[in-house]
Amino acid sequence: MQLVFATTNPHKLREMRDLLAPRGIDVRGLDALGRAVAEPAETEITLEGNARLKATSYARALGLTCLADDSGLEVDALGGAPGVHSARYAGRGTTREERDQANRDKLLAELERRGAVSRKTRLVCALCLADRTGTVLFETRGTLDAVVADAPRGEHGFGYDSVLLLPDLNRTIAELSPEELNARSHRGAAARALHAWLRQQPLPFSIFT
Picture 1 (cartoon, rainbow, N blue to C red):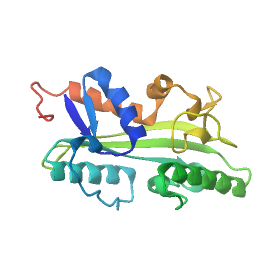
Picture 2: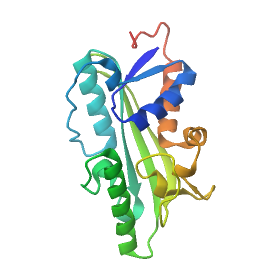
Picture 3: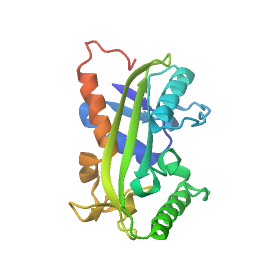
Picture 4: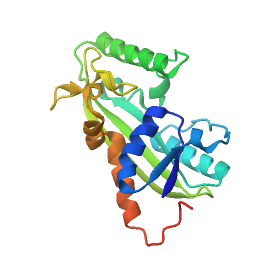
């Protein structure tokens, strides 16, 4: 089974491939289609809304079943921010790496400015699957609880991973192996829910054709 994952983020694409390949699903990113499709503006106020907007927009534009996600970081002491603005929280940087660095710097600075506050946070992945007509087939939400570290640690991952500490391991997400991350990540939880739903569908299940 082949499935279009509506993203150009190579990190997200690699994670979703690793998660769904063992379940017999071949995940293709937008770059592999050889077709230019305008990226829809993410105008919704929730992660679920943006995931749904992307899945339905790309599905209709491509005439293919599409999976899309919107992921973000919710920090308790910041009232749930950066949330839907996680990818562009600092509003600086030209490349993805520059934006990630600026976002991490702003997050640490905002918490330091507030002093002795809770650093509890969670990564959230809202996942939506839409058929070629733009009809939503399935939606789910996966989370990973963490705390914001005092300083970055680790060489793996992307985004906020190097400043998100998992207390039970005393390691940041960026210090986990890909296998460890997939077993407990927000995106992994969402992907497993998707697979469980797919297994419940009557055969032949033709959304991929």
